[in-house]
Image 1: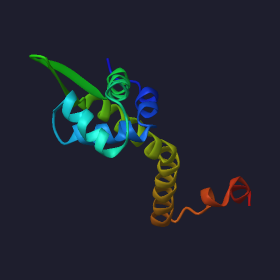
Image 2: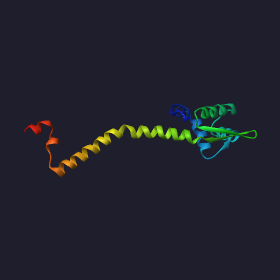
Image 3: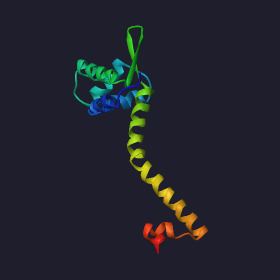
Image 4: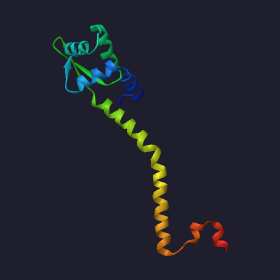
Length: 129
């Protein structure tokens, strides 16, 4: 199941969670290393960091696997792809139809110049004259 973009962006709304994601984006990390790095970034308790990790996992941004007693976290590529897809749709979708219409009008103009048929571009009254 693909992660929901709304949950992803909600999770990324917190600077500590963005920092955690950047840390883990560089490579898998055990929870202890994440806690230590975050505590250098800001004053937060270990349970606080664990809460942030849980939010990131629930949003689908992080995966976790057990390695003995350690929990190794990694970025889930499916979540980053879902976010990328959603953002791309925002930037491409609004312009797709107007750009198609522009291309059609350009092609129509070229065709009319080749054939010398200006009546269709002048509107319906031009055909009556």
